[in-house]
Length: 301
Ligand SMILES: Cc1cc2nc3c(=O)[nH]c(=O)nc-3n(C[C@H](O)[C@H](O)[C@H](O)COP(=O)(O)OP(=O)(O)OC[C@H]3O[C@@H](n4cnc5c(N)ncnc54)[C@H](O)[C@@H]3O)c2cc1C
Image (cartoon, rainbow, N blue to C red):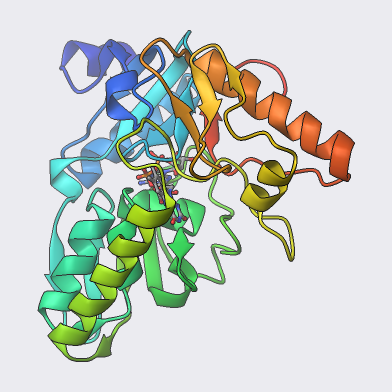
């Protein structure tokens, strides 16, 4: 049986790999073990070894919805890359590897006159992250366009699951931390390339106008509570610009928290906790974080 030490020896798993540069916040420490398996069999082997040895596992996509602790993650981080980066246009679906970037997927679909995925042009994540988070915007979310996702479990089982089986709901799926989406098939509608391009331009324009472009952030920090918007609530309390260390509530969009060069991951964590506590005590609404915290000890913020 192949263990983690053998995989390290073979170079399939590396140790003490700094994760910050692989996230949009550019913050956070190292993973004890880190692997970018080139193919499905290698992925299954790595997951199996970690599971056998009780090593906790986390999956990293493009790191656009994640904060890694300054102390890093005392476990295995799996990151899918070139072996899972293909887009194939089949007659009835678009098949994409989990590492495919969402804007690339949107543009590829539109170029083929396949519409419905244009909203992805504004989300800087991967297909795997989009399935896990049921990513969406502008009135469409992943569950509206997903036919099936191919998921590998820590026991090495490969399943095809649709949106119902994944229990996709607002920024939620039932995927466990050690389950890896390796590919997804998307539905589409035939349409005019021009119409798809116009929709993508509109999505990009809206984002330029409303979001703090050019800053270090991980998108929306909190999920919107039913019938309201987290940004509106935070703004209504005058919290734009509030800061902890090098992390602050964006002055442009109150549900984006931006990091300056001197920020730590702990600053982000503490700011999220502070804002959540203020909103809860002053409005009674308990905001639930959308961004994922990895490697932090204790309660979530
Ligand atoms: C500027 C900006 C704008 C954004 N706008 C939006 C938006 O409009 N709508 C929206 O929904 N999100 C938005 N986001 C958040 C983010 O881009 C999405 O949640 C995206 O789907 C995350 O994908 P990722 O690959 O970066 O995942 P990561 O941040 O790397 O991971 C997020 C979660 O997905 C899991 N994960 C990643 N890959 C896999 C995989 N292959 N298998 C299993 N689990 C996996 C991770 O373990 C983690 O739990 C925005 C982020 C930024 C920085």
